[in-house]
Amino acid sequence: MMLALRMGRTLSELRREMSASEIMMWAEFDRISPLGDERADIRAAQIVSAVYGAQGVKVPLNEAILQWEVVPANNIKDPFTAFENALFAATQ
Image (cartoon, rainbow, N blue to C red; front, top):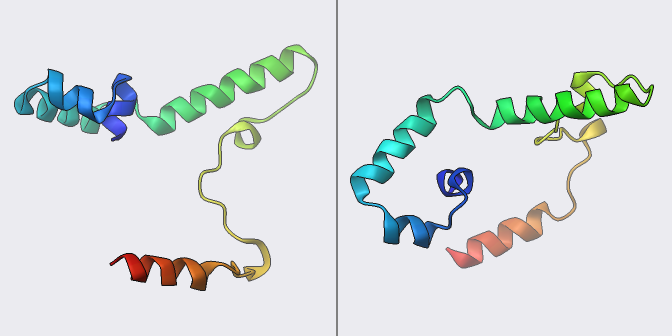
């Protein structure tokens, strides 16, 4: 799925227009490529920092970078965890 997103195509387009060997080649290239999602997030944070810096606001990169995994503060448990687990178990 991530490979399709990076190539700007849907999964059905990839299956229809590419052979299995070509998809495997692109997947391997994507795996070893240094230009991954983390680097794109850092580049976006640099752009955000530069835009705000041009307006006189200092924004460090660690504040501008996207935080994908948020650690809950004060160990507060999600009230919907049990509900989500029950729904997941029902689909199995």
